[in-house]
Length: 396
Image (cartoon, helix red, strand yellow):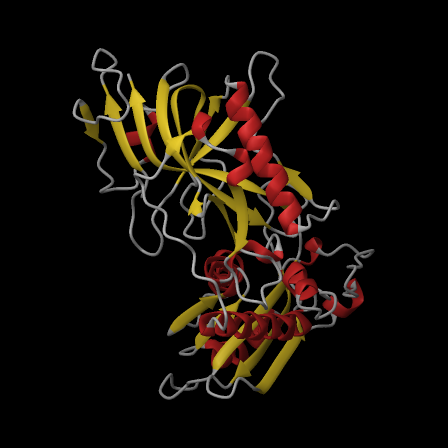
């Protein structure tokens, strides 16, 4: 087996496996494909692919035919994983591994396969999971971030779901994303977003709808514009007091680091507030030249008969740090009701990302004062505006 010294090539690899048909059934590797890539010139240096015969042939019925062209006869005549284990080990061990969702899927299946033959698995000297990396760096401008979606976004054709073809498509997707990010880092002619100060919030009923404008803050080569909503040339930030919490913290959606994106729902009983948010929706849609084939998600939810609602999002920190960036205070309801004074309020520490620490604050039926930014987004499948909290005062 080759030494890990001076193995500078990046090993992109992909597995095709069986699909479990009942709970507890294992996934068997059906195909392994890989390419070695020069990290300095980004060219393919070598490739290897093979079908793999599972040790348990009952996982492959005689009528087995995959939509990608893999048939039972081809699998039955293929080498076993034990037959190719040395070759796979030599390709992968001591190199940087790369692939799409390899940390949660391919690496796990690979270790299982080596364990079945009582062999130590290859070990990487680093990993590049393009699903996690591109979600973090490239964002969800291309939709759900699956390889076939990313390939369609860049005009690379359809995914074949064969290991070697998918590996090469993965490599091309990474190069395309890297090129876009490089161009964005140059920023030719980009408008600089106007900083949003936390103390610049104005009561929502003092906002002049005629003074609301939308500007682009993205370079000319962005497919999806990054835009900012202004009020008299200042980023619009509104203050809403005594909003009743209808639903507590939601952790349904995750960020690129696997942490929950925190949000909660409040009643929007004021017609003036609803009119303002509707106006922001309409102005932003017109500015975007919104595609009616996508789903516009309005700020105001009118599905409840007793009251419209809006969702407020907490801003969490980026990178490796943990915690939230929204200023959060809790205030004894017996204290002065003036929302402009925080003298009777206690700030909630953001030293740790503990959802339970916040969950007790945002209980349904409670009330909250909020300073809110409006952040438009535009993805291929949906678009809208997020209400992001800069400051919250929770009454209890």
